[in-house]
Length: 129
Image (tube, rainbow, N blue to C red; front, side, top):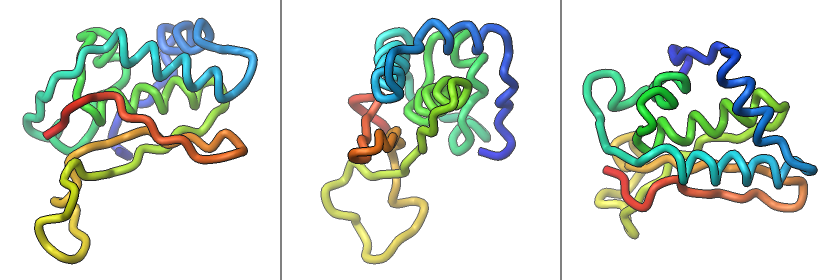
């Protein structure tokens, strides 16, 4: 994700500011809910976008993205407000098809946020490929 444009544009700053709430946990929940309800999930993995999230402004412009695009948008908006949201690779398969660990075993990205009491992980899509 080091190549993803994370420029804090005025549009991103304004959106983040509009989602600020009384506590960090409430703020991250508001960001998550906004992205989940306002950015449609579309599995559109072509070229580099199959592995690298699209820039947050592009996701906002198109109003759609896959799990990593939407999770990266949540993380970016949270970062602009001083909160850390991590992206976590996971699998929708109950049991990995092969023993061991390999990048190809993971097919979904969720957001993780430590609210000081526990780490919460939330998914932004009901399906991912």
